[in-house]
Image (cartoon, rainbow, N blue to C red; front, side, top):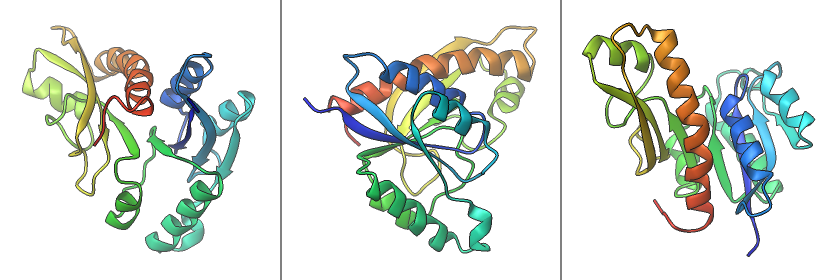
Amino acid sequence: MAKKRVAILISGRGSNMTALIEAAAAEDYPAQIVLVVSNRPQAAGLERARGAGIATIVVDHTAFAGDREAFERALDAKLRANDVELVCLAGFMRLLSPWFVTRWSGRMLNIHPSLLPQFKGLDTHRRALAARVARHGATVHFVVPEMDAGPIVAQDSVAVHDGDIEETLAARVLEVEHRLYPRALRAVAEGRTRA
């Protein structure tokens, strides 16, 4: 069976991108990372991707003077030109419009640092601590027009400790993310789960 062609969209250091690249290096992994795209030319993850021999492209959102549709059309064109079948968002700090999300419906994944539907949006670790939840974690979900609301592919959690601060909790959740995202992408690439 041919491996699914995957693009990863990043804005920063790309730690989840690295976890996906490492998983995809395995012979039996059902997806190959063919492209890493960043909206920021200085994103540290671009260098990591190049170091792993993966093609990189920058589609700098600032070059589109606030025209989100033009930015997304350029992004979409790059993905299609590279025969991308699945898209993984990994710290991509741009909200995508319904137009783009619909074009990639059922083929775009995101990882979110909470146990959705809890704590959608930003500052999830701070909010989890404030809510005194016993467990916190990460969710991989299909992207839909409503933020952090798509069908869930996989979740995993860690215990919240009494002495936790945002940084300690975030570090443990990040370890979960790095295990969870490759597992979720495998399930989607093998067709075991659909939106």
